[in-house]
Image (cartoon, rainbow, N blue to C red; front, top):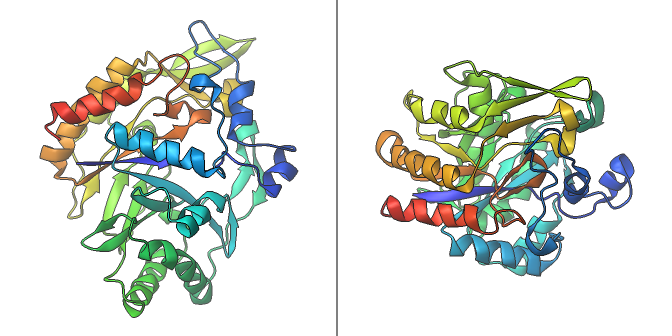
Amino acid sequence: MKLIAIVLPQFHQIPENDQWWGEGFTEWTNVKKAVPLYPKHLQPRLPLSNYYYNLMDPKARQWQAETAMTYGIYGFCYYHYWFKGRQLLEGPLQQILHNQTPNFPFCLSWANEPWTRRWDGMEHDVLMPQDYGDEEDWTTHFYYLLEAFRDKRYIRVEDKPLFLIYRPASIPRCEEMIHHWRILAQQNGLKGIHIVRTLGGFPLANQEGFDASMEFEPHYTFAHGNIKYPWIEIPVKNKKHLAVDYDKVWTNILERTPHRDGEPVYPGAFVNWDNTPRKGYNGLSTVGMTPQKFGWYLTQQMARAKHAYGSEFMFINAWNEWGEGAYLEPDHDYGYSVLYEVKTALEKNGM
C-alpha cells in the first residue's frame, strides 16, 4: 500500500493572486483570518511553531518530504494548473524538477477548473477561464508535462507515469485528448501514461480511455454517498452554517461497495474538512474529528484498499489543505498526532 498525499502549491506569492486577492496573498492569508463560528469550532488553525512556510523555499519542500517519509507517506500528488498554455502556481514544481530535490516520489493532478471568486461567494466572477483547445494545445501541454514524466522520482504504474485529471467531464474532447497523449508518450520513449479520473463532488460521466479512477474524499461521499447526511444547521449571526458529523462521513465511506466496473479504483481518505477559512459561514465543516478517530478509520480503509479494492495506492486529502481543514502537517493543537496515526495505521496493516 502506497499512501499518496495531495499537495496544494498555493503557499507562495504570485502576481495573479496579488492582483485578484491583494498584495502578498497566499493560502496562509485565508488560514490566518479564520474565526470560530460555533462552540468548539477549532479556528484558526495554526501550524506548529508558527511555521508559515513559503514553498519557493527549498528548505520548506525538503522539510515536507522528510516529514512525510518519516511517517510513512509514499509520495506527493501536486496540483497542476494549466489554462491553454498559461500556468499558475508552477514555481515549486519547476524548482523540484530543476534542482532534483527533494528526493521524494511525486505525481501530478491537473486541477482543470476555471479560477473564480468562489471562495467569497462570487462563483460567476471568472478570474482565469479554462479552454481546452485542440490537438495543437494538447501537444503543447504534453510536452510541458514530459519533463516531469521522465523524472526518476515520478510515480509510475507498470512503468507508465501516473497522471490524474480532476474534472474530466468538463473536457469536451477528453477521450480524443487522452488518445493523443498516449501516441505522444510512445513517440517520446514512454511506455504510455497511466491516466486516472477523479471521482469527486461533481457530476460523473461515462467516459472511456482512463486506466483507473480515484475516490477523492470527502467530496465523493458528500455528493455520491449511499445515504443522506443529517446536515447540522448551526446559527451564525442570524445566518446558518452547515456542518456534518465526521463519524457519519467516514462510516459511509467504509460501508460503500467498491466500484469496480472493470477498472481499478484507488480509494481515498480524508483527514478532516472545514473550508470556513475560505468561505466563512457559507463553508462546510465536519464536527467530531480527533486524530485517534482519523487513525481508526484510516486503518479500516487501508484494509479495505488491500482486500476489497486490491489497490496499490490510496490518496489522502490532503498534505496541506489548511484552508479546507484537510492537512497532515503538524499543527498547534495536535502536534504530530495525525501523522503518528498514519504510521500506526500502516503498522497495524502490516505495511
